[in-house]
Length: 393
Image (cartoon, rainbow, N blue to C red):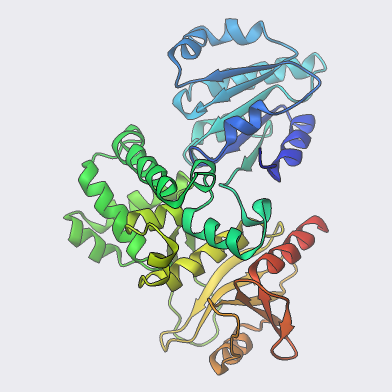
């Protein structure tokens, strides 16, 4: 099994707090990680999509009251929101008995915003962790690994498939399951055909500004409905919004968020890309690479660091702006080349946003300077610098 960097953090949280919510999209490996835990207490696993386990919680107070001194893992917890008030009561009772931590591990496929009852009821008693598909820094950094990860995405079943064709077939099945089963469970009333068209339109605009009205007109729905679909996909950890850098600098700035599918394999399947040759010749190639790099970077940002992008109406742009907790600003440009050039628009944009340094991300290679404060650096090497900064904070 590929070791997940989240493992140690999860164990530490269970040692410190009564309940931990491990959240992320379906099939990222939450259950596998939970079942692999070795703790100083027994583990009981309940899958709320299994009727027999759901039946055990028909009288949840009776069942959970009999399993003290255990870690109870509840999978797909969003299917039973009425469980949260009982968990709060049990946690408080066990606290009074001297049991301070490690009571419940809740696995869910929806963000805290979609688990409103849980986030409100268990306030002060729960810690949230997000689990992503395989990150590049978890699986290696050579050329073959990067290309495979970029094409197939990071979902374990896709990345570890025997060949690219099998990987993309899995991605297609994954998307179909969301469109035909999971999104309707979350209250989406659109037909599967309409939802797939919507998902494909977003894929065609990967890492771009999405015109909600235009998308709505193409699908025969209003822009508010389009926004609600995007909000839901974001809450299910499927898409990422990167907000515009918005400091008042006296320029006309683009203010809309960039929208991108978080997993590159899903994008490529929606666009019928089945191989690296097809990807490199496809019009979305550059945007797909940019979104892939942004996702890998955002997954390892140090605590307190915010990410945005900068673009003026005149076309000057910085792909990613990282602002640390102390106010230091770092500019990132993403290129699919091993010999990037230092452009005047980048230098001028750095001056405008007061960035003290910049990195031009390339696929791989040893870092080298392009100017006094601008480095060219491979994606794996840049991730290592971020992880180092995160560990030092």
